Length: 412
Image (cartoon, rainbow, N blue to C red; front, top):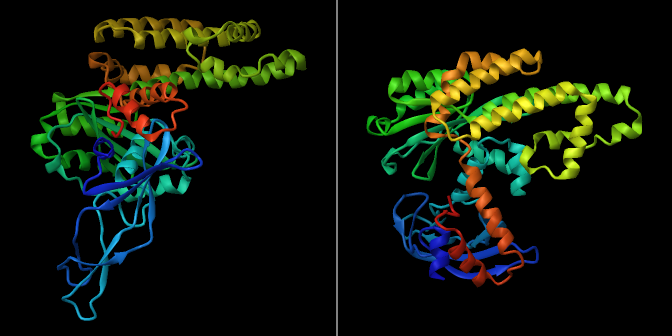
C-alpha cells in the first residue's frame, strides 16, 4: 500500500481498501491518522473519539483514465471542556467541506479549464456543469500562500467565460517552473485593474523569478504585465489563441461557402462534403486518402477555401519550425504579403492583430512558451491508458503507472 499512498499524495491518511466498482471506477477507502480535532465552540483540541459520520465519496485525480474516488468516514470528537460536551467533525486539509472533490482534483479541473470551456471540461471529466462552476467559485479570490512558492518562472493568464456568449469572465492565473504547474489564483473578472492588482501583489522575491508571461490577445492582460514587470519579463501571446484567431477566419469562410454550395450543388453532391469542418481542422499530415479526396472535392467547388486552408497550414508550419524569433518574423511578414495578395477577407481580422501585436506573437519563438502546457500530460496518460487497456487488477494497474510515466507526475 505504501506506493499507492505516495501516488495519491494525500497527507495524514492510511488506505484501508481498494476496489473497482461495476463501472470500472477505482474506489479507495481511507481513514485519517490524525487523532484530534479542534472544538467548533471553544477551539481547544479534543482527542476523545465519539464515532464517525456517514461515509463521503470524493472525486480524486484520474488514474490511467479511470475515475477515482476517495471514500472516508470523517471522525467525530467530543469536547470535554465545553458545557454539554458538544461533538465536532474532524476537518482534513485535503478536501473542503461540502465539496464533492478533493482539493487536488479541484486544481486538476482548473488546469483543464486552461484553453477550454466549462462545458468542455464537464464533458471530458464526466462531471456536472455545476460541479465545475462550484470549483471555480471556491477558488475565486482565495488567498495565495506565497511562502510555499520558491519561484514562478512562467506565468499564464487564461480567461474563462462562465456564461454562453462570452459573458462573466474569470481569469485563471498559473505558474510553471521546471514542469511543476501551480494554480496561483482565480480572479473574478478580467479587468486590467484586477489583473494588475494581483500581479503587483506578488512578493518582490518572486517577481524577480518571473521570466515570461503567457497571455491571450486581450490588451488588458498584456499591458498589466508590462506595467508590473517592465522590460525584465517577456510577454508572449499564447500560440493557442493565435491559431484560434486565424483558424476562426478559415472556419467563417467554410460556413459561408458550404451555405452557398448547398444552394448551387445537387443534394447528392452536397452530401459528399459531409464532415469537412473536422477535416479542415485536422493536421494535413494526418489526413488519410479518403479524407484528402473529400477536401479535394470541396476545393474543386471552392478555390477560395483552398487558398485560405493552405495559408493557415503554412502559418502553422512556421510555428512548428525550430527557428529563431528574427527568422520567424521574416517568415510571418512574407506570409502576411501572401495573405494580402490572395484577396481573401476572412483573414483581415487576424492580419490586423499581427500588425498591432507582432512583437508579443513572435516572442513565442524565444523559448516556445505557451499556456497550453496541460496537453502534454493529457496525451501521455492517453498513451498509457491504451497500453493498459483491459487491466482489471488494481495492483497491476499501479505497477503500470510506476513503469510507464517516465518522469510525468500523474497527480499534477
